Length: 321
Picture 1 (cartoon, rainbow, N blue to C red):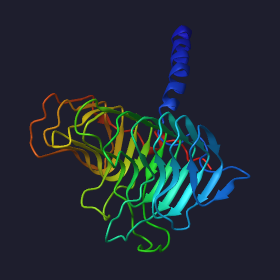
Picture 2 (picture 1 turned 135 degrees about the vertical axis):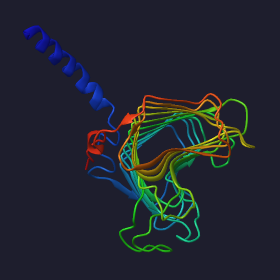
Picture 3 (picture 1 turned 90 degrees about the vertical axis):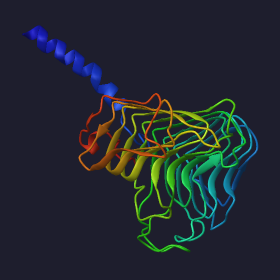
């Protein structure tokens, strides 16, 4: 009896840190620290670490923080109050971590105009422990020009939107700006762009909105994507995955994710090939687990291990100050 109890204790101890490591959201503080430097635009042209900037764009457009150098880390920054992109990445081996990016509002609610949180060229780019919200484009979009190839890793981030707390130029309090948490754009052929999204909390991408179909993840064109240990809540569509078309087709693998309060957990389009949905957890307020548009046949499709989701709070990190 004592040996059995001891064995159970050992197993519990071993599993506890593993479970904690898989929680979704931002595990550490985001934004600036004491003594932050206030600027209105930041252009990074040399390798190095750039940290603790409070970038108030004062309504300006363009790339508010523009990275044209390789081997750059942007850390502990707040970027806000613009009509353009929060960060434009045009170098490789770039890390963006512990940043808060918000209120980048372009156009009007009725006439959607892009302003992304982070955008730029595919390369060796990592976005980690960032909180991005209230943009009129996508929290993250790579590559709007469809000219680059490479890899992008997004991990332990909170990518969200919701009702504006107060009026802003072109917007009224209560309106929810933005298109998607993530949107992929690539060259149509050649080597696929590699996308990893893991341990992210994506929520609020619901109607009414600025576009007709709103998804947390809009996975399309010539990518090879692995989505794991992410939590989706309060979205119209959690994962929108698109098949063959004039701009290529996505290869998507989803592992160990959970979906809550969503109209459609998966929207599979245009006969997407080799789509894998593994061990997906569904909350009680998911209206439809799967929709198919543009063709019912999905060559190579697998959907295994579906199960009921635990309480939402058990899968997300408590918000850090």
